[in-house]
Amino acid sequence: MKPGVFLKSTSLLNDTFFGHTVLFITEYNEKGAMGFVVNQKYPRKLNELVEFNHIKPFPLYVGGPVDQEHLFFIHQRPDLIKGGQPVTDTIYLGGDFTSAVNHIDNHRINENDMKIFLGYCGWDYRELDEEIAEGSWEVLQWKDPFSVSQLI
Image 1 (tube, helix red, strand yellow):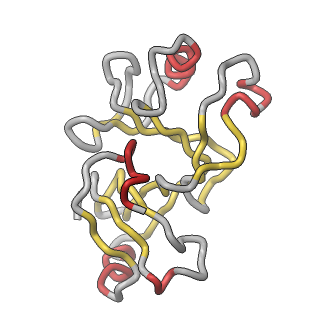
Image 2 (image 1 turned 180 degrees about the vertical axis):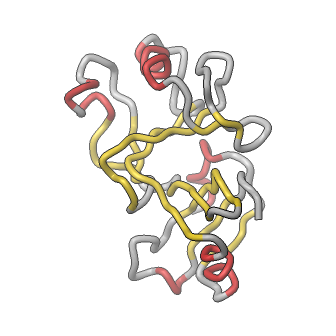
């Protein structure tokens, strides 16, 4: 497997955190795997968090059960957000978040350009491969984490 892959949970995970989820894998190497749930909106928006109450509303997503005290993001605007790590040819993980927030507030970045997550999903080396082999995840042929609602 490589970064940029989408996984859809199967019925084996229906009664877990991962029931009815679609993941976007952003890292996959000898240390393990990292990804985000891309189809579960968080009930509050970015501007409802105290430190961002000065900006326009922007959706947040529940990225995963790990480290839900921190924000993470993916985007496809390296022209506006510097410092991101490429996941695919067009999608980047992280970067200058202050700059990203300013671009959101100035209407230069929208929901089709960026997703912000509370928390992430993580697996030890080969753990995700084992979950796929046991039938918990279906590998999808999909390219766009910003239009993932079409997969559900």
